[in-house]
Each structure stands twice: as structure tokens, then as C-alpha cells.
Length: 311
Image (cartoon, rainbow, N blue to C red; front, top):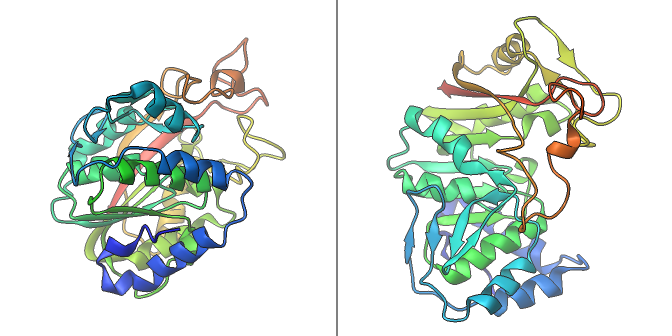
């Protein structure tokens, strides 16, 4: 496979780019050949032909054969983050990620920033960050199909200073304090040691930089922590959901400065739902049919908080 990270242009992260290349080349996923064939079949777009500062970022000029284009993009199902317009085809993803961005964007200044996006998925938010003035965005996510979706976007619109590597936060090496902004959205509750994850975020932000944390919380002002014995909203790997007060305590233990709460919102089936581009069951099937304030397991339904920390 041609190295998709040749243009990273960030000498201090050359080892990380090489790690990502090797991870792709050594992958033995059963669907990899199908995904790569779909990406290869996409039209090669001109450099930086895009409109990023909009709810559905547009990448690449409109294709003449949209039916074939759509079929090749659909081979990369499921599309979790979006919406996107790829060479004229609108991808209606599971998440209305633009709603989350609208809640965050008024509070952020990313002009000229080098950004790390932890658990970035296909890189939707990285595109929005570039559209908001970021200089470079590096995303890490170990889920290979999301990296394939990013490769598809790279094919349609090459040359953006935006990369998605098939890695986790534990793979990001020193030097520390290298990013102006670090985002961790929808990740913390999947980590077995939340405070350790927060400490790692602190290490990766430069002095004077900022960290953005978005995660599940329990409603109310108490000091509770939900540790699901089984699943939470049908997700297997949710390790702990804290109240806001407990979360702020974790932030303090990690040595991060006091966080400013940007938003608290209940996740609804309007924001996270099944679509033609994500055909599996989604949030609606994860909530109690008689009481949408509860998950099917009887836990409080998802509420998400977004917080900003300036170092």
C-alpha cells in the first residue's frame, strides 16, 4: 500500500507516521482488500478542492458517475460520523456530528493550532477544525474502517493537513507538550483508567494550550459513578460514567486546571440514529421503550458534557 502519511510534514511525529504506515501494511483484517478496492476505485480529486466550514463538509468536485461513487463509498459502511458531501454524494451518517460541533465551536479559538484528535473516527471533526482555522490536525483511532473512510476522503480531496492514523492514544510517543489543542470526545468512558487518560492528555498539550473533553456523565449534582456490570446502552466497553462533580474531581487528580463546562446535553435519537449509511441499530433501540429516560438496561439515558481546560 502506498504510504498515505508521506505528506505529514511534521518531523517530530515522523515515527508516529511510520507506525501508522506499518500498522496498515501489516493488517490482516478480512475486509481490508474489499475496502482498499473501494478506495482505489474512487476518482482522484484535485488538491484541496473543499469547503470545510459547514455542517456537511464538501470534499472533491461532483463526480459524473455518482451511482458508482455511492456504491464504493457504501462499501466502507458503517459511516458513524458526519454528515459529509463526498464528490457530490451526501453521506448521512449515524451521528449528526454537526450538532455537537455547533455546541463547541462558539467557545473555541483554533486559529493556527496544531491539533490532536483522540478517537477521531473518520476525521469529521478534524475537517471542522481545519475549517475553523487549525493549521494541522492529527487524529488517532484504532478502528480500521474509519481509517479507510479517511483514505477515501484523501483520494477525493488530497493535500489537506489532516491525517487519521490507525493507532490509539497509548501509541502516541513523546515529545510531550507538542499540541496547541487536544480533543478527547466520546473516549473517556471507554478507558479503564479515566484519570490516567486525563493525565496523558495533560502531557500532550503545550503550555498555554487547551484540552477539550466530551464524555458521558450522570445527571444530577451528586457524587455518583455508574460502573455497569454488563452493558450500557448496549455498549460492551463502558467502564464508568461519573457525575459532573466526580468528573471534575478526576480532572483535578490528573493535574489539569479547573474545567469550564461548555455544554451539557441529553443525546436523542434525532442526533444518533440508523440511516442508509449506518444500517445497524442505534440509540433508539438502546433506550427503554416505556421510558426514554432510561437505557434498556435500566441505567440513566446518555447525557454528555463538554468541558474546556486551558493549561
